[in-house]
Amino acid sequence: MTIDYNQRIPNNVNLANDRTLQRALEHWQPKFLDWWREMGPNDFAAADVYLRTAVGVDAQGWASYGAVKMPDYRWGIFLADPVADRTIGFGDHYGQPVWQQVPGELRSQFRRIIVTQGDTEPASVEQQHLLGHSCPSLYDLRNLFQVNVEEGRHLWAMVYLLHAYFGRDGREEAEELLARHSGDVDKPRILGTFNEPIDDWLSFFMFTYFTDRDGKFQLKSLAESAFDPLSRTCRFMLTEEAHHMFVGETGVGRVVKRTLELMKESGTDDSQAIRDQGAIDLPTIQRYLNFWFTSSLDLFGSEVSSNAAGSFASGIKGRPDEDQYQDHVCSEAAYDLQTPQGTQTVSLRNAMNEVMRLSYIKDCEIGVKRWNMQMQRAGSDFRLALPSPRFRRTIGSWAGAATDPLGNPISREEYERRVQDWLPSEADRAFVRSVMQRVTAPGKIAGWIAPPDRGINSLPVDYEYVRLS
Ligand code: BYC
Image (cartoon, rainbow, N blue to C red):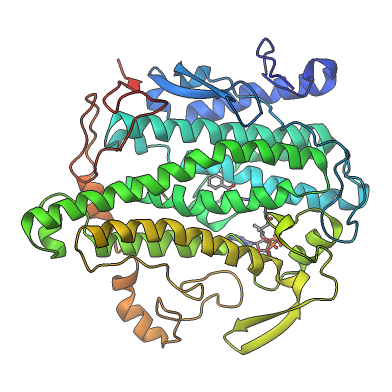
């Protein structure tokens, strides 16, 4: 299904044939643009940014690249092509044909999940609102903006579903998605991580590595949904999402690389000596990793969750890559959980959040291994590690339990005494911000990060990816 760019709202859902829906979305569009102008990277509205824009929805050749001013980006509605005769892959309705409409009895659960997913997208743009001012290079600045415009499009994806399938309630929810704001005292974003400030680039890279990866897992589980328009929407979002995690993985890798270079040149791994040279010492990188990883673990919800059981049973949300499992109904299976009170056996359906969290942790390990290989090759003994999923949790069985990063229970007093070694302190954050001075000359790069191995879309690294004047 080709994307129609002649419409005011580019789409591949034949919007022109549904005048009521088209009008409703055209009514929401200026509000979105107002929000973008106010909460997005607004100081760069006049810059020409080398952005990719979706031109199709098949895996090959789906995007075109070119200079665009961000407010002119063609946000639109793109669903992956339907799969012929698709059937429900899990839960109580396993094997039945998928739904093209939301069943009445599941409306509020579907709406809640779509709203929660939709809420994260503008939240992340708000979190990164001022980051452009401290960019390490034009290459990185462009990547930030690419991520931002695509999160904006992912908001469109959810707003389309709300408008098209949830009537008046859906339209009201779509308005609310622009009314809540990241970190706002009165109207914060729904999920914890999306209210954390991202005001330095190390946080941005950790966020795109860890938090966008939660996005990958949540979108994969929604791509399994029995509600076919949701599944198709999420399938296409996943195509765009891959680049965001690439930005995170290579970003952290380049910070590590630069630090290792300076450690080698100066013959020391002393943190202060590295900081004196304007780079970020490895223990600080570990503390940032601890912060963003643990915060992202909370995004999977509680270990024991009747919401998760209900979503699985009724066909709302499956497990990522449901095909990998033998049992797709899971009505009899049990699951052993380790809680602060000891082992607890629950039904597998109730433990679906934990099943997802464990697959996510496995996926997170891959990048950590790569970063550690860099250290091994450079002759450093330092290794980064993911902390235990019991550490610094605010949701679920381990919420509020004092443990060290290995997950060993400790007293609250010991936790408070040692937390500075485990999580970024105010002084760490101030230091990290202090090295992040804006570099915008083509081909130049800040001193705390190594240049990328290659440019974007086969262009050289020193290409002028953002024309600021
Ligand atoms: N913070 O049974 P529970 C992305 C709430 S990222 C605050 O434990 P459930 C992206 C929960 O809402 C992916 N509240 O968990 C990445 C519920 O509240 P209500 C986003 C939390 O419901 C980067 C209560 O606790 N997509 O796309 O099974 C950039 C009890 O819930 C948190 C989704 O999340 C938290 N961390 O699962 C841009 C998918 N965790 O309803 C984008 C849609 C839980 O009782 N969402 N709570 O008031 C879901 O599937 C589920 O809502 C959750 C929670 C997985 C989030």
